[in-house]
Image (cartoon, rainbow, N blue to C red):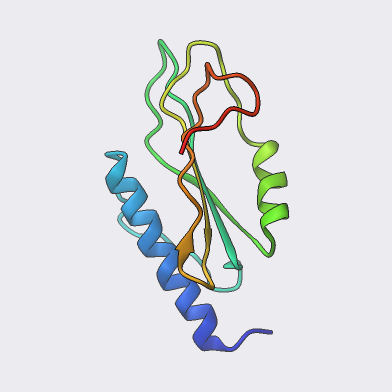
Length: 118
């Protein structure tokens, strides 16, 4: 079990990052986001689904915590869906223990599999 100070730091950094990503993408901020410290783990994965023609744009981020980067990557594989006409998806991975985020990767839904842009 981690010391309470590390758990609180992870929670603080995660909330700050989520707020910044919402601001960057012009999303509304939840009035009261409740993230319980027990679910916070080392890696934060944040996903903004693509915008699809004829559908409302996403208005909220999807996020999860994982103990390892490999687990974070595996979890996102089951969540991300793409269409030929979708655009504007974004995917972020952050290591909350070092405070350094992985490069933001914008997923272009028209890009070939395995093609990502920084």
